[in-house]
Image 1: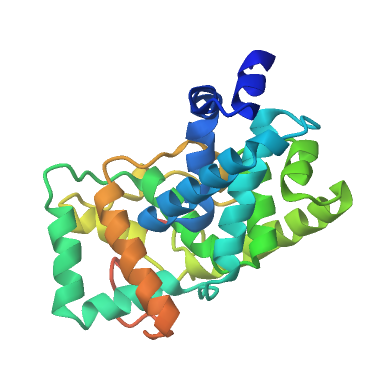
Image 2: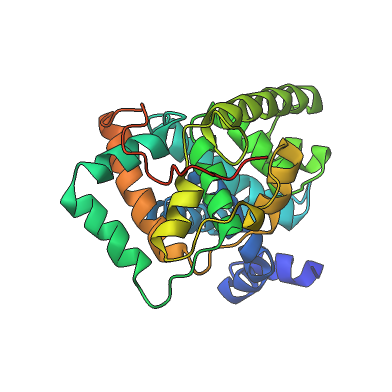
Length: 275
């Protein structure tokens, strides 16, 4: 990015600042969504962070690139938000499915989203949603390390700079996050393990009117394979349904409601997809 834009922005030119942000905006939005998930919370955090960046632009010392500097502000704002929230249970989706099974209001919301003309089932998009939902059960610092390195594909040096930590601390947090996500998925997702208690992927496909064919599901048996799916997936035809999921799951997790034992049987079929 030309130095002149940075100089102009530091001198109070909001247009120059907007042009600087424009180049980074898609990445910044992806970071907040991968960390937070909840659509309204993600957008609020992003706008709050950009307001912070603008108010501090005159103090930008250019020790790193503008991209790294603004990414740091956005990431740390998201982390601060998550630290104020209650950590979610690994089985948050199971608790939500159980709550839906026991509530006409909640189940009708899901049916309404699935029958929307713009809805189409896309398993990779749902795996990405699931990743962020399960990620909310990690310690926030570990979740941030995982998102920056394995989802956003930042270099180790850039990720440690964004987080304000040493390379050694980053490696420790990333290793812990990877181990935790492996363990959580192995016990949760029926795509990963025969013993997985969450059959949401198959259940959504059945609910959308398509037969659940195991051959249609991607191989997500290893964390690297799951990360490859998450890295490429973007909100699309399932965005409306996932918005409902995020809002209701947030309410349930904040209140600590819903059993985490699989009671509803949602999506559990005789030949559930397996690896």
